Length: 459
Image (cartoon, one colour):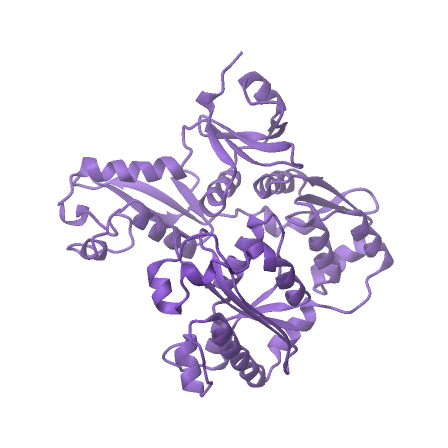
């Protein structure tokens, strides 16, 4: 079963957008069996260019339902479905973001009709929905409105299912929702664990930990382990006799605990995860004109980097964002290497460091602001995030640029004494993987707050 969706949004900064219209067609592979279409009051203004594109304005949404009023219907119509969308990464991110604001975990598998079309319908000059639909003779009504675009995606997806002679899409769907019965032992294990964020430990008959994992929903993740039919999962299913877990509340804390404990315990089924997670690092240097330049290179523990990335693609994506945010020069951030001015200068997003028009000391202040935010080298701070219940917070402790460990504190106990704080911290290794986890998490996700250690008095 598939839930084919299209979402219109307010536009705006990344992860600050709101939904203005949503359309969902529940599709069984042959026909639409249910549908939901609604305007949504995003409780934030719509960008002018979006109004011009979609025709949806603030007045139209004043009396529309807010997202929390339609959330239950969205959960129901997508239950047991794979989410299908044209550029699924965008629609699924926005939908997950809205549910995250409600504090509700929304987790679905996705299929992207852009990627499927590129594989099954090669040779098109454009894979935008409008141009692809026109090339394939698919009628589109109400272009750039959720219902029109979603219905066009239904028709496109139906065509893709026909084109998929190897039945890869159907096989993936069957794997996603297996109907086989699980062993009673595995069912009993799942029944005993909660749907919480944390780290889980699989044990064999001797009590030895054979696998460590982390998840925002441990029960759901174990269900995935126990219904998978790959060789590794089948071996785990045979060997496991019990699962224990530690709730963390914070996904960042779970990631750090998983990293630490896999290295310490070396479980037999975690061999791949023992390897380093980061591959690329960002370094800086001063050029002959005195400007700070940034360079991405293969990670090297002997060199001091500003931050690390799992791939060149993620490094480039982040550099594009910070270049725009801090009005840095594309030539100086390594995005371009033109001899004259960079493209950013042409569109007034660069102050002219590329042609020595902006003084190095002025430009470098903005570059240093970026470095200060994304590198905790020599910094002492507390990262405060979710706890295991509503009265608790988690804390990640960094002192003089060194990751010290994690802890939890009750909201009734204020962080007002550095000695007490140190006593509640569970020590962890300051390895490069831990540094990468913290830096990449702070780049892409939100925590409650970051507090300089200088704000915490000592006894």
